[in-house]
Image (cartoon, rainbow, N blue to C red; front, side):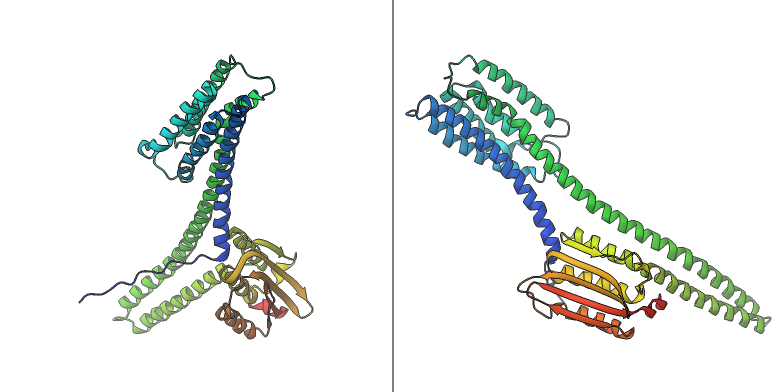
Length: 399
């Protein structure tokens, strides 16, 4: 008998998570375009210098068009650099044959046309800077490239350069190109390292919380189970000789079971009953971590609010924002009113989001609020969805 396994559907990210991912991706493309802008500006500078010497010469065309082709050959190197933190140490030279050949060919052609040793070496030096060198090697490559370009710039100074041509601009720009490129890529390294550190910290915090819960459950249940085992063992020994004493031990064991169940309930309640101020702060941090702009209003006496009634509401509405919101902004507010406490959460909505997208979650909130004789108001405007919950103050006794 054969069975067919259906492929799992891909998990769709929430709008906030998608925005956070887009933010990191946008930062990367800013870095790429910044490096390419430096290269193109340098090629334009050398092209203008060449044309200033002789407008009728085809050298400007060779320097300009060849420079654009060389800039295009560095794009694959930049794309590979994005994942350099996950790459194995070393350089995969086979993938770099084409960019290196283009850099060498352009350097030889442009250097011969302009008559500059510095321009001849510049494309190869820039290509080498973009490689995924092992740790501790890359900065040495940059220093060596800068020193060699400075030496070649001094050698080029012997050429006859017209006084009205800003030759030093091209020279200085060429010398500084490796340093400016490394600075741009270093900023990306710092950003992605911080992003991964934040994710690791969140996972570590969750792991520590699970270990703490497991330790408390183990200590609680281990104690009660040990007592129950001893009581049952004693009852087994007393039954043949003194049935009354044996029954007393059985009743004591049953009482211990009740104590264990009550202790488990109390432990679960202790983990669930978080002060309202902390609940709103956690919801705010969660939404911000998902990439939303969040405004939260938490009064000073928020811990006096009924956490047993409003805590689940805060968690459920926060989940709805992550699932069904537009992923740009949210607003949370807890306030005391004459009849009790009021909690409001508002968020932007996607234009194509159906009106009943969060229906099941809101139905659960409505049932919970009805149990404590509170009210639930739902409002939807063109670009905003708002949920307002009001509960009487005496429900705080349920904590």
